[in-house]
Structures are given as structure tokens and as C-alpha cells.
Length: 120
Image 1 (cartoon, rainbow, N blue to C red):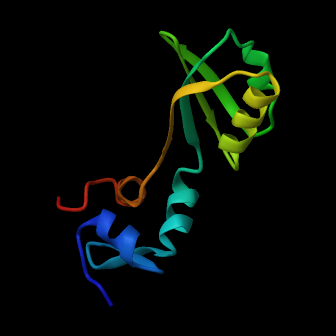
Image 2 (image 1 turned 90 degrees about the horizontal axis):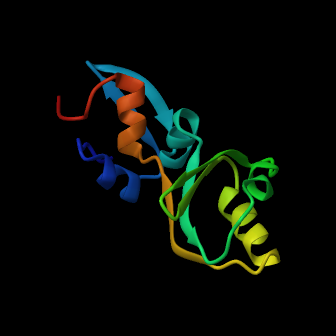
């Protein structure tokens, strides 16, 4: 058993996590399961090497939205959105430069479940 206020530590070391707020268990599960339950979306951010029609991405079932920011695209989606996006790029011979995948963490899940940061 590990007792910690550091969500990164719990996410890295624990198979199961109980989120306790004011002495009450508010959630119980695997770190990945708790994160997916409260924040299932991921963001794939990249700079395409060639012009890309947004509909190639928005037509994918995994994709929720596509936004442009400067020369970068930010694709928000669920499930295996990274694979779906990179497959479309590969089929169209487009290289994804500066590729980053952003997803919620156990810290984000804690805030969503309790309404405050762990040390508050």
C-alpha cells in the first residue's frame, strides 16, 4: 500500500488507486481507468509537411475536432486517435513534424473527481 499526495507517483507505481477526498473514497480503479473515465480525449498536435484538408481527419470516427494554430494542427479525439491520424497522414504522404500527444493524467482526474488540487 502506498499513501501519497503525488498523483504522478501513484500513476507510475500503483496498479489500483483509491481517490480519497475529506475521508471519503470518491473513486477506485486503475490509474488509466480513472483517467479515461473523466477525460477520455487525447490531443495530437503536429505540423504537416504539406497542405492537409481538414475533412480527411474530421471524417475519422475517432476525431472529435480539428483546430489550426499557426502552422500546427491540433486533433482532439478518443480511442486510438493517434493511429487513425498517422494512418491518414501516411496514406497521403504527409509527414507530421513536431508530433506530440497530450492526454489527461491522474492529477487531472483527481481535480475532476474532487474539484481541487491534491495538496489543497
